[in-house]
Length: 323
Image (cartoon, rainbow, N blue to C red; front, side, top):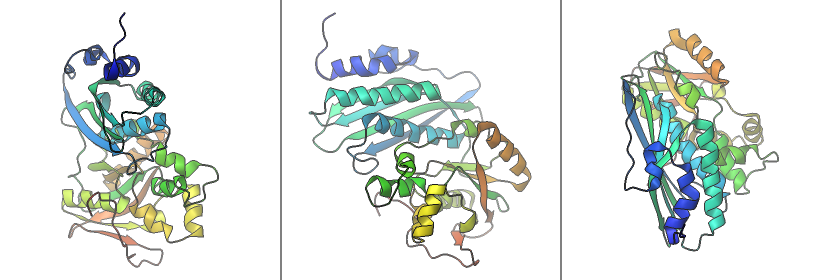
C-alpha cells in the first residue's frame, strides 16, 4: 500500500486504530452514530492548552488520558454512560512522531478501561502552545440525566473521593510543594472520573456536577441552579493523607484545596433520606463519599465554616480563565 504523507499518515498510523464503528475507519468527513432506543444522547466538550491545563513536558500518554478523563468526568456528573468521542489536536509542526505515538497509546489505554472509541476529529499545526479539544458522547436512560438545577433546601452536600489533590498536585509538579511519593502530582496529571458512581445516581441525587474549577465555586453553580444557598464545614471536606499533611504543615493551603480545582470528583445534592442509598451505591463502586454540608433557603451563596463555627474568609472562590 502506498504510504500516506503528512498529517494523514499520522492519523492513519496512530489514530485510525482507535476508531470505533461510528468513526467509519476515519475515512469520511463525519461519523455516523445512532443512540440506542429509549436513551438520550449526552454531549460534552472540554479543551486543554499546554501551560494552562497541563505542563508542556508532561508525558504525552498522560496528557491524552487527562483530556479524555476530564470529559468522562462531565458524563459521570450527568449520570451518562460513555459511547465515543471526537478529537482535535493542534501542535507545533516539529512535534516528533514519538509524541503522537505516546498520545495515541494513552487514549488506547483509557478507551479499553472506560469502554468507548474514537469517532473522528482533526489534526492541525499551530505556532503556539499545544491545544487539544475533545467532544465526548454518552447516553442516559431518557429523562434521567442529572442536572445542576435540582438542589432544594434541606438537601445535603456530598462529594466523592478527596478534595484538593489536583490543586496541590500542580504545586508539586512544578516543584513548589514537597511530594515525596508523587501522589499529588499523579492526581493532577491523571484524574479519576467517577463514571461507575455517576451511573448509579439516578433517583438518589437531585443535582450534580464535577469539581473542576474549585469546590466552592462549583458548589455556587449548584446553588444558582437550584435557587438555594449552601453551608459547608471545612473540617468535613475529605483530604487525602498527602493533602492533609501538606495543610498541617502550611494551613494556608486549605484555601487552595477548597478553591483550587482539578479534582474531577462528583459534587452532589442528596436528600437526607437517600443518604444510605448513596453510600450503598458508592460502596458498590469502591468510591468513598462524604457529606460536607447542607443546602438551605436564601441567596445563592456558599459559606464555609471553620472549626470554630465562624465563616472562613476566602480570597478566591475558584479558577476562572478570564478573571
